[in-house]
Structures are given as C-alpha cells and as structure tokens.
Image 1 (cartoon, one colour):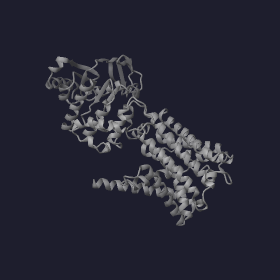
Image 2: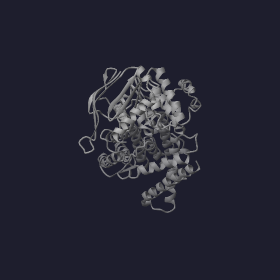
Image 3: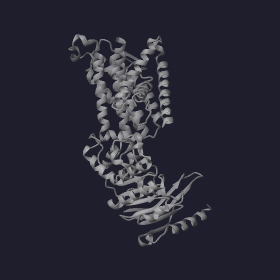
Image 4: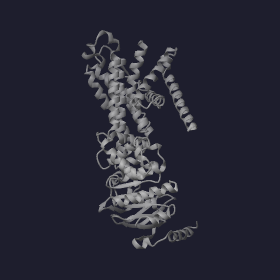
Length: 293
Length: 257
C-alpha cells in the first residue's frame, strides 16, 4: 500500500514535468535538454525558501516563473543567436548546474522539520482516516490544476499558434506572426512546469540535491511516449491526461524493477533501459500500422 | 501596387560559385493585375517571389507595396498584407490540427493571438458555406485532421486560408505543380474565382503554359534573371500556348539544353 501511494505521489509530481516535456517534444518538436537544469533549479529555490521558513504555497508560482525565465533564455539562444535546438538546451543545462549550486549554496540541502506545502493548516484539518493520503491529495490537486490550465491554454488562439508552430512553422510566418516568439513562449511555459515539478519534488523528498536533475529529459520523454502510444486509440482521453497517466505507469515500472531486487544505485541504468524498451516498442507499433495500411 | 526598383541579387557572394541572378531588375504590378510568370528552372521566378515576401533579402534596390517601402521589413511583418500558397500542399496547413482549427487560425490573421478561445462556434456555419461550393466534401469534415486530407484538398484549404482575411497581394508559387491534372484544374479555377471575387492583385509562378495563357491579365517570361516577355491586356489575350512555347524553345536552345 505504501509502495502504491509513493508511486502515485512521485508519478504525479513527475507528471507536471512530463506535461512540460510534452509541450517541447510533441508540440514544439524541440528536444529541450534545459529541463535537466530547470528541474533541480525549482528544487533548489524551493529548498532555500522553505529552509528560511518562507510561505510554501508561494514557492509554487515563484518556481514556475523562475523556470519560465530559464526557458525564455533557451529560446533566445536558439532564436536570436541561431544556435541549434539541442545545443541551446545543453548550454543552458550546463550553466544551470552552477546556478543551482549558487542558489542552494551547496550540493545538498535537507529541509527536514520545515513547513512545506504538505503541512499547512488546511491539510492539518483533514480527518484522521485520509491523513496517510494527504500528500497524494495535495499533489493530485496541483497536477490536475496544471493539466486543466494547459488544456485550456492549448484551445486559445495563443495556444493554437503554439500547436501550429511545431506542426508547420511556415504557416506562422504566413499568419504574420513571429515564429521565434511563439517558440520562446512555448519553451517558457514548458520549463515553468518542469521547475514547478522540481519545486514540489524537493518538498516531498525534503531535500535538494544538485544531481537530482540528471535524466529528467529521459524520464519525461518516457512518460510522454508511454502515455501517447498506450492511449493512442482512446479518443475520449485528452493527450495531456494520457501523459499524466504515462508518468504514473513509468514510475510504477521503476518501482517494480527496484522491488525485484535492483539496488537504488542502478536507478539510472533502469531508467535508460526502460526508455530504450519503450522507444523501440513505440516504433514497432508504428511499423505494423504502416504495413497494414 | 507593387514596385521593384533596381533589384540586385547575388547568390554565394565572394565564392567561386558566385552567381548573379538579378541585375537591375525593375517590375511594377498595378492593383488588380493577375500576373502569370513562366520560365525554365533557375530563371529566377521563385527567387522573385521570395524577394517580395522577404524569405530572402535583396542585395540592393527597393521594394514598395502601396507606397510603403518594405525592403528591410521582416518576412512575418510583410505577410500581414500578403497571402502565399506554396507548391507543397503541406506547407499551407497544419496537418495535426482539424480543418476547423486551421480555418480559425487563418481567420484571425492580422488580429492578436491572445487568450480568447481559438475556435468560435458561431463562425462554423460561415466556414461550411465557404467550403460547400468546392464540392470536395470538406464542409462535412470540419473535425477531421488536415493530415488525413489529399494534396488537392489541402491545397484548396491553403488557398482559402491565405485569402480569408483582407490582403493586398496574393503570391502563388507553383501551387498546382504537385497535383494531378484534374485536381490542378479544380484548384486553378478556385484560384481564379477567389482572385476575381476579392479583387486580389496576384502573382502566379507556373510551369503550366496553358494556365499562364488562360488565366490572368498579364504574362511574364523570365530567363536568367531577366524579364524577356511582358504582355498584358489585349496583347496577352491574343497570345497562344504555341507562341509562348516557341519562345521557350528559343531560349532553351540558346542555353544549349
């Protein structure tokens, strides 16, 4: 039971990050490695603020904004300085490693016995029976709020431009809109979500570690690919919902692997292997479809 | 009115591959003209359109539309007054979005793309009315993704999308070249109809000499960056496909083709 809850908790936290990756990878068609830096940046900012007894709820918008700034910078490097997409992300990711160390002051910052978003007065007033689930409930609320806001945004005019730019950027120019600007906005929102996810992750784990961002991109991509390929035929589910579910499934797979006796030091290897399997399985399906078509 | 004055354009300047495409090119297109441009590959037809749209910069010279100098303007800014349809039907539409969403996007051109709802229900009927005369069945497929449509259907969509909002200028870049003859005819007739209805000033590059003769009010033939034939009005009406073809063969022989 505790395992199930922890899978759900972490899966839902990573789901916010996966929503960000969904924007860059699926919508913008931009492999954005900035996330490996913006995820721990959210965690670092949260850890520092929480350790100074800052209002935990306010850490959420602050981290989102910080992530958005970082995403904007990646976008500016790509659009204005004309650096290739992958390289722009790598440059930002590398720079952020130092920035994160500067923010936190050191490589590892625990925040035990501090007030986080999971311990405010509203949460304390819930009945005894659902107390073990309080973290899950808080995370569920935040994740689904993000999902619904994103769903709404993608239906607006600005959101439709965002969807169009990854699809066919010529048409953005034809519509007399600066395609660079649209890409930058997309990257800002995506990294805002990733940083927000890091912020919540640090509060749930009660520490910040400078290396916690390694593999963020891979985890997010795996979640997006699991979600979108598993539920491809399920038309009543929105893609964003599939991504959230994909993230939980991915965490469950990792938890299963650990339960089978792998050490937690093997985690990154498991992550990589799982990602490879998912990628290849996803391709296999596509090929079969082509043959039958 | 479009005016191009003393246009110079070099490709690969400063290298052994340096090539001068345009040398002191001058061209004026009056309001309401429908110009068909023909010429062999590499004669500068598409480059001419790219210069007007700002996809490539001029080396020197000036381009003005309705008196406004747009020579240094960014491509996306110029497009507020220009509609463009490309040779590749995939370029004018977004494949992963529905017909309705595509039309809604184009419908908003020139306005702000803000946080209002992208697709307006009340416009749906208007779109259906617009698509119905085409007889392509698109009006019943508003919620189908454009990626599932055929090239001809997509090109018809591109045509509608680029002319939905008021524009000064329509640029057609071999927009029927990727279509089968029958679909090309349908799209060409649709083009002519839209140009007449909306009184658009248009420039059309085509390899189809019949279209160049049958449609439009003026014909240009380009060769090695120069305009070697320019007929309009009654002179153009009197021209036949064979006349153009003869001239075409003449210049091709000169080149040694």
